[in-house]
Image: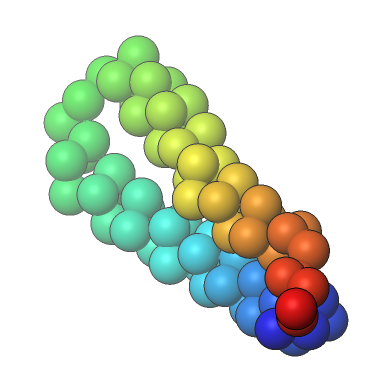
Length: 71
């Protein structure tokens, strides 16, 4: 697969990941943290704010791998 196509697909996947992850994190926060204190909010948003990095790293690693050479 050409590197430009991989970067295009990866960019679309990253944007989609961030939007969907933000929506899900917000829905979970509203549903579960409505009666919680500020420490619970801080911990939830700290963890959920860093957790999206893991799938993003996989997408970026895939985007940057060189295409295989045809033999």
